[in-house]
Length: 468
Image (cartoon, rainbow, N blue to C red):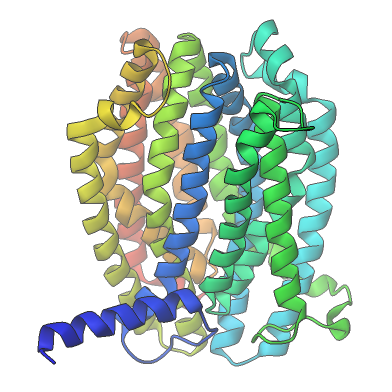
């Protein structure tokens, strides 16, 4: 057997091992191997999520321009819920990873159960509010009467079933902290696989199931994610993992809940800042018509598809940082971040070249008018200019989060995305006459600026002393 075939065999075995998954500590051994074992299932998980989002939009684009715009106007405020879910997930990953590094598995299980309690309460409260005020939310986001009449059902179902969103993100954060990204991958692949199968059935109708139109996409999504949550809960309670939740953990521990809330507050703040900034950007784009809104949405479906694998690598860095800090190995934690960022940058450089050359061809999979495709093409070409910086910004930001220092990225986000991105987007779009391109430019510029600031602060090393 040649050296080359041996290497290929090793890579293949490592790939299969990563997909099969096994909770483990990554405090010793090869950092590159650890990144592969953690990031491959996360990349597969995120790619599956992005693939569903892409296919979902392809189906919905065959309903109407109103339907496409409805998803955009609904998902913008829905990102607030995603912010809460991701913030809780960050806290869960940081705490569980730190406890695993310390070999305190029972404390990790206690923290996991308390986080689930928080998620359920949030999901119920926001679900009731969102369902009752769905029409008002669409109107506030700029939807006209015809759009609201066609899309309000979609908005009601998405908000009403948001508890599945919060739980699936949170519990996956628990699994990642324990070093088992494979279970997180399998739960989301199950959810998204069901979504893809159910989408055309509920959107266009099949047998005794009527055609729900765009509302059918929300029904399929909610069913799929709920099944993913059931799978997660089964695995958490079956006693075969490092994090075993049993009857003994069914106790409300207010001190732990407070700790989770404190850590998650920074994570929630990060995404809430970005989300509210994004809401303003969506509102600006909506001023230029339905075609602009639809073009913006299909472009972001494609961007979402390419950036989620990068988020997978960034999440791997968070787990490595948390576990290695728990094992009192801060230098190894820092090295993990830089190695992961390098691989992420190499990946996004390839995507930048692809979008620069073939943006129109990529967007042609959507059945939309030329005006919509042209705006989406501009979005891809302009935003991808900042992709290399995006790569480092994502990984370094998750490095802070994995250490439990969720406030630093939040403060950077407030300055960059509120104090700079919002007013600059408005100025360029309206005062300078750049229209939607003003928004696209600001997205590329401000995410690049975020990365540069985060790198400078990360190098100071204060995150290594954070207590979790």
